Amino acid sequence: MRRTRLSDEREAELYRAVIELVLEVGYEAMTMDAVAARSRSSKATLYRQWEGKPKLVAAAMRHSRAPVAEDIDTGSLRGDLHELARTIGEGAEHDTVFMSAVGHAAHSNPDLALALREMLIDPELARLSVLLGRAVARGEVRDDAPAAEFFAHTLVGAMMARKVLEDSFADADFLIRYIDAVVLPAFGVTS
Image 1 (spheres, rainbow, N blue to C red):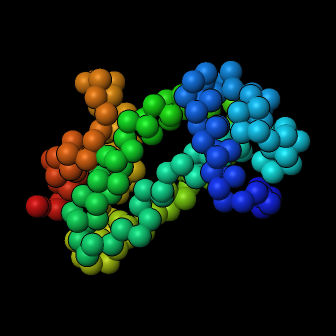
Image 2 (cartoon, rainbow, N blue to C red; image 1 turned 90 degrees about the horizontal axis):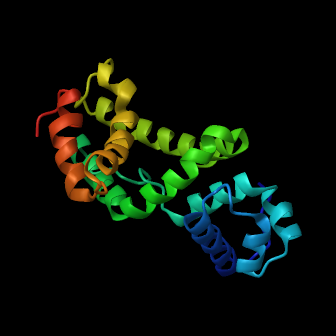
């Protein structure tokens, strides 16, 4: 992605317009024309800066939420995961609704899937790996723990499953209980 010449405020306004449109009409029906009109931008500027809808939506998603596992280091895996749960829980409703709208489209749109992977998924997976690596270095978790392969899956799965199974969002309280009952025991960590 090329560096934008827009001010931070203008860029944030544009990203809000993208998020609003995806939530209103879905990824498939959202058009660059609609984004341009809503954000009072030119379509040419949007294409010049983001090359197309997939990268623009991925950039808006990245901008609209703080990185989940960034800068979390409480000194224990339990503390780190509880802090992670609070961070995730704060945006659970918005993130779940938005990811549902965009996630479906990513299955049939390889450009969107790639943009999401490069801009959101891979960086978060790397942060989670660092978080778990610190727990290994502290001796809290074995370096060959079988659950390590599924670390991210358990966290993401809990968020999606709660909405499907209980029609509730995975708030911080739910995620903390889940971490204590499922994730930590899977790594042999007792509370």
